[in-house]
Length: 126
Image (cartoon, rainbow, N blue to C red; front, top):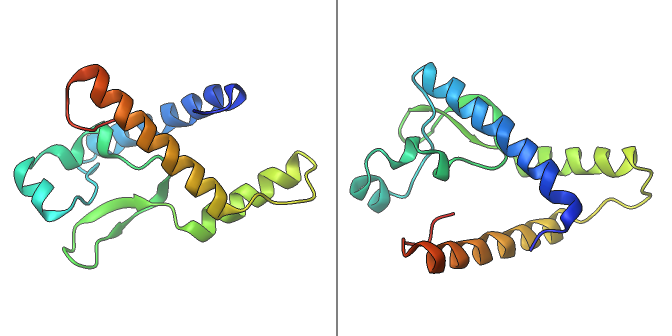
């Protein structure tokens, strides 16, 4: 899964993201885009915490297809700059490859979904 030294920082980050989501909900936002079949089957799911982005954008923006104002995921270039600055801050001469980090994160999410499904009997949700 995740290296032990990343668990606490990730939990802290998710706590901040959860507060941001609560703030958005209090202001009448907090909805993420879901594929059409899911949004029809579960009309309120887009507001639930489990569907929110791990790395949300700092700003809300208008969805180009629906016109709905919502918070999207952070742009990959922005995430790459953040990772590069973090690597420099700890004295690393090399910046980790963003693609490798995304691939690792996707594997962790998939693994967690499988474990969550097995443990809860619910569909593959984190």
